[in-house]
Image (tube, one colour):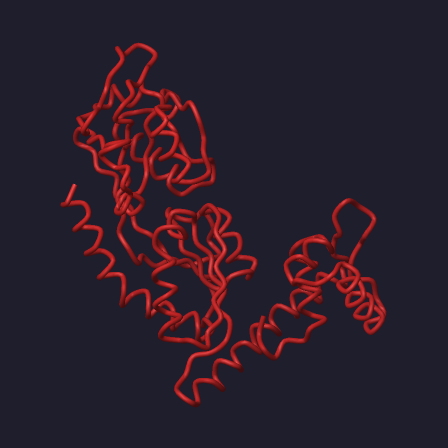
Length: 324
């Protein structure tokens, strides 16, 4: 929300995006009657109904859809005005809305956001997380200015730029044997080496569909000669931490980012990295933005900041990899 934003339009956008008066009230820290009052006043001022309230979820009317598009553009323009005014004094100010897929949000963004906030104390940062598809959709719908994702987007309405390299590695439990369909029980204590045949037989823990990590893993294994249909996927989980905990419990092996293991004390004690014969799964983390002529100033500033800090973070990952 820009500092200059009209409050009624802020409430209207919240109801439209949440499709619920109750959820909008929770998001804005208001009571539901207060939200209803603001919408009623706006409808009376315009002389039209903005929402269809007949179903379980509120829906925009034709007039509401028109207003939402203009309200979003208005918020963006006012935000840019606040940024440019602040820049007259050599400062960055305003609200920067970001989204990141779960691995990036959990293991990379906190330190980056803390450093950016230290350099730009007048910038209000807002970060949401979800899988790659959800982040790309939020960029398309202008709910966030920049997204940070783990796999290539399927949408043509956005642009991407690599900002950091990652490697996906297979981890297996140290203290449990992994049962399989036709392979004797096997313990990879301390690491070990897996083959294509092993990958088609051991129980695998995979991220949910729509996850960039899952898409990259399936593509890499397919090139390696392991068909998706041959994988013994025993469980789907919605986060890297869930996969690590499931591996630790002996439920199977799973692919996770090296960034997620850099400071995990359980590595080597509860689970170990299993090298895969002749296969390394590398990927690039991507910055994703809506395809448009020019981005708001804060978005451009944050992208410059990310580029400047990516090299240092990459060196950190290489040190962690060599240490293992």
